[in-house]
Length: 187
Image (cartoon, rainbow, N blue to C red; front, top):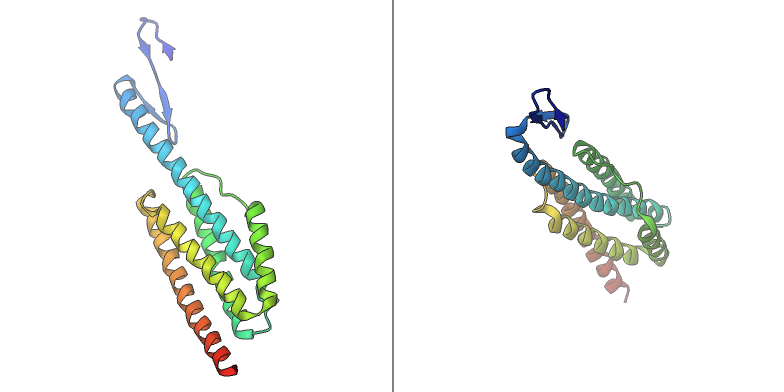
């Protein structure tokens, strides 16, 4: 508050990118600040959770593609890793646009997922395909669960990422069907 010489109080409120409001606008600005500030914070948190999942997927593909003896599976994992790298960059950019700080890495949960994926990769293509398929499916569900709480721009981004992840699922399903057919021929 600033006291003016005529004893009138004038409150200036700094709000979102240094806009100034005078007394008549203060109540409305405080209402908006609560909505926008909390809304952005919730969106940033939701996008950071999705970002964590993207890091996890990228890291799993990175760790397991080198272990795979099956070159088709290895190439598939490398392509999907590139997709997830792109998703990471797009999510990070959106979080920055909202005024947030993108997280880096996956933490302990990601480390455990990487260990599990590495083990599955050593068991062969069928085991790793099943694990990464389930991971992609969980990722799509995470996006779907958070979609309604996001602003229009973030929703569009999430829908684009989900569309790519749905394509990943189709590839995994087709490849797992192929693996099952090969197994039935061998028996």
